[in-house]
Amino acid sequence: MKVRGERECQDCGTRWRYYETGSIACPDCGSIHSVGIDEHTEHTDAPATLDLTPVRSRIDADPTREIADAAAERCREYTRKRGFIDAGELRSLDPTFVAAVELQHVGAHLSRELRSGDPAERYFYELLGGADDGDRPAVESVPSELRVPYGLAMAAAVDSYQRDVRTYLDNDPDPTARQLSGRIRDHRKRIEALDGDVDPADANRLVHAARDLGSYSTGDESAFVRAENWLAGIEDDTV
Image 1 (cartoon, helix red, strand yellow):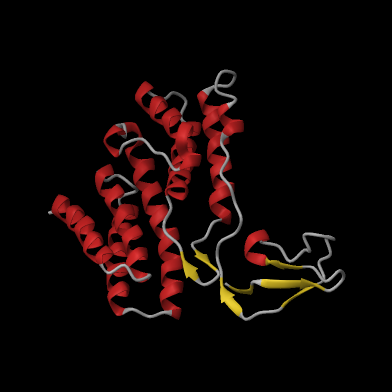
Image 2 (cartoon, rainbow, N blue to C red):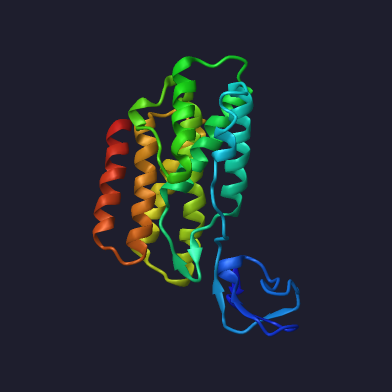
């Protein structure tokens, strides 16, 4: 959406940046009587921090299903606030967002299971340990039990990012970026059609391709070649 980023309180005169607070309420006096004083600018992100410390503190006290449910909910709250256009600028598909989407899907899966295998639980706890810093277990360690939620998570992260890339390209058209985005979309839809049941390496390649799409769209010419290589790796696996 387009918002006025610079605001002024009509009650006390304080000026602040909406981009930093995500609220029209004055940060000094709390009044909601404020006006925008600049031009409307595309902005989809909101101030949000992923902190999984409260969930990790329950590890020794609660069963895995409850911890997984709590982790999924906390990640859901975080990803719901996030976007990738900040004051008109397209940001990268950052590792913390991807990790949060993965933990949301993996946690939701384990919270529904009456019994989970040891490899799945080990993977979940490793992911829980570093997701808020953008750290994820190596794709090679994804256990077969988590293949589906992993694939769906990567597709969901790519989908969220591509929505903002499309919005950005509406304002700053680039036919080559559009074509590349279309190829990424086709691969994402294939993963969704298969309910996430694809090689985790391919799902991970798609995330890298989407990240490089963003880099190319904002001026990194070499990112186009990198994105092409990631997509070629997926296409070679599906031949």
